[in-house]
Amino acid sequence: MKVLVTGASGFLGGHLVDACIREGHHVRALVRPTSDVARLRTVPGVDMVHGDLRDAEALRRAAEGVDVVFHSAARAVDHGTRAQFWDANVAGTQRLLDAASGAGVRRFVFVSSPSALMRRDEGDRLDIDESTPYPDRWLNLYSETKAVAEQRVRAANRPGFTTCALRPRGIWGPRDHSGFLPKLLARMLDGRLPDLSGGKRVLVSLCHCDNAVDACLRAALAPADRVGGNAYFVVDAERTDLWAFLARVAEMFGGRPPTRRVPGPVRDALVEAAELLWRLPPLAARREPPLSRYSMALLTRSATYDTGAAERDFGYVPRMSQEAGLRQLADWAASIGGAEEFVRSVRRGAK
Image 1 (cartoon, rainbow, N blue to C red):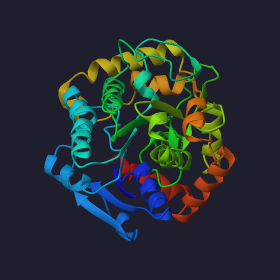
Image 2: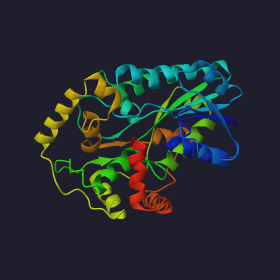
Image 3: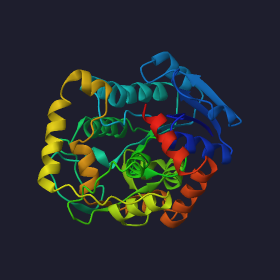
Image 4: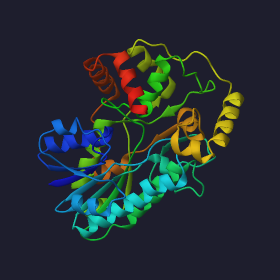
């Protein structure tokens, strides 16, 4: 097939490009003029189109002659104004949908997130499935705009233009310099991450990048009458004790797990103060808050997902185990110079 990958210079998008090349597909990558494409240039056979999701002409050129679009680009940071999130995640997705439909693309696979279902006020949610409705009030702008974009993708499904959405949670693995795991790991190794669990065992689903990529490729080839217009949770097989997992990863890299605990009431007061301060547009637009409701929810709410629908409709079974994924992560970190260089790469990625 001829495929278009957005977010190809990023973490998941880069792994999607590699997998598509291995499968023998012709790959086109939409990359922003400011993106670091040094690694992409080393991948033989990748056709790069320079532009972004605001550039209708670039999107038209990128979609021309393409069979499948994998849309993984998004504003996924924990700060920004409503206009920034809406333009990147909703309007950008709509422009790409329009370009793909107009160019005769047959399949549109949208990389969404379980965050699309995160409510402002809720507790633990274990083994939920796709029958869970969208919230009336979302936790933050990222959750809201991913949900709206996902709904637009699903609504665009029609004969000849099959659309679906995948919801991988907590994507992790090698070559990630700016996702949730490297950020937390860097803070642990620097001694800047206290135990925020409040003494609670937090159970979560995570998704190794290889499992997310495998789900994307399977969804691209599944029968249209099975996947069209649907959304699917995609996660690893393991139900993970989050803080024990973080402690183990820290020890893998020569660090120590968090020992200093922040009492729940103090933690919640700090979050509220940060949320109030980050309503100021200059801060919201440019800097990530040290704490937010969203980051605290990810670290303190148990959240696991049932992947039965993905297994039924396109044969998804997580092939990468957590144990094998951790060995892969350690090998990759060693290949770039070990823990210190990994932390430096995370700091560079955060700038």
